[in-house]
Amino acid sequence: MLILECPYCGVKAEETEFHAGGEAHIKRFGPGSSDADFEGYLFNRENPKGVHFERWRHANGCGKWFHVVRCTMTLEVFGSYSAQVSEPPQEIRDAITAKRPGWCWRDFA
Ligand SMILES: [Zn+2]
Image (cartoon, rainbow, N blue to C red):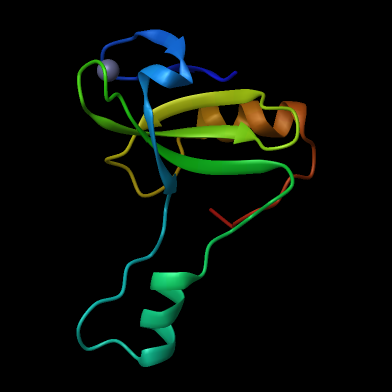
């Protein structure tokens, strides 16, 4: 069971309080993009064994979308943050690095 914390209202609850919304930080492609870019946007998703960035919605609470970083092997949650940012906050990246030295899923440099 995952225990998640909504960064907006501060509620910390089991995952049944929330609704999963897939991978976070996906670069979107629309009209005018190449077929390959659009296909990648529609169908390609990360499936890491380790650190994963996900979208969640506080369905039984404030209703807002946010991002969660967790480990897919241990279910350890590294933190949650607003979905209104294009990159994870530095404190989240530092928390991951402290527990998973050398982790690399996507280059946020
Ligand atoms: Zn909330």
